Length: 270
Image 1: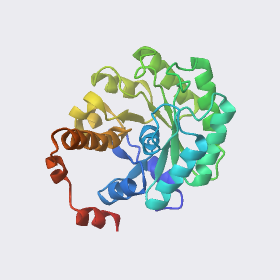
Image 2: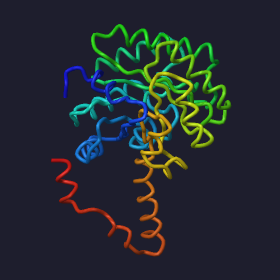
Image 3: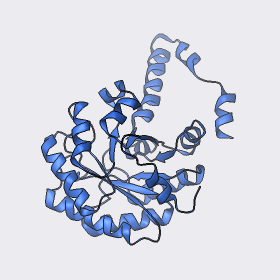
Image 4: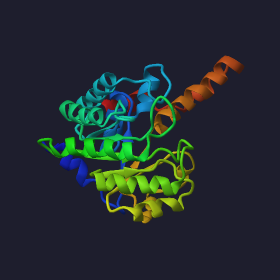
C-alpha cells in the first residue's frame, strides 16, 4: 500500500469504471473481503451497530466509530473509508473535526450525510452545504489526500424528492465534496441522471432492487463507486434468521450444511 492511501483511494474513483467499496463489519469480514479481491474496504454504520447489539441510525458514538475503523485499517492492506453518518454532530465545526480525527486514525476518506440523526429528517439545505464546506476545507488542509463523500439521504428516508437531492449534491460539489451519493433513488434509470448532474464521481448503493443489476449496468450509467452499505451484513443475518427458524421451529439443521468449510475461511484469514 502506498503511504498516501488517500491518493490510492481517489485513483479508484473512475466514472464509468466503478470499483466495489466492500463494507465490512469486523476484522474477519474485512480480511476475507480483501483476500477475495476487494480493492477498498468501507465501514458500515448499520453493520457496526449490529455488532454492538444496537439498531441503525445514530446509535454509535464517534469514538466508537473511529476505534472500529482502526480495527479494519489494521486488518487489511487496502484503503478504508468510514461511513460516518451525519459527521457525529450538527455543527459544521463538528464535521470538520470528524474529518481531522478520521485522517489521524488512518482512514482514506469518509462519507457524511444530511440526516439530523437520530431522526430521519434532513438538515436544511443551507446548513448541510455549510457542513460539507467545512468538512472539505478540513480535508484539503490535511498533509495527504483524503476523499470526502457527501450524501443526500432524504430520498431514501422519504424526506424529499429526487430534484431536491440532485440540487443538494450539486451544491455539495461546489462546496468541495470529492464524491457524491444519493442512496436508493426511485428507479435505476435515475442513476444516469444523477451522474450527469455533477462532474465529481458518484457512489451508488447496491441494495434492495438495485442488486438485480450487474456492474456493467452501473458502469454504463456512469457510476464510479459501488458500495454495499449493510447489505452484506444483513445477508449474514438472513442466514442466522433462517437457520434459527428451522432449528427452534422444526428442530432441523439442514441450513447449517450450506456453509463453507472452516479450512476455506482459514485460508482467507491467514
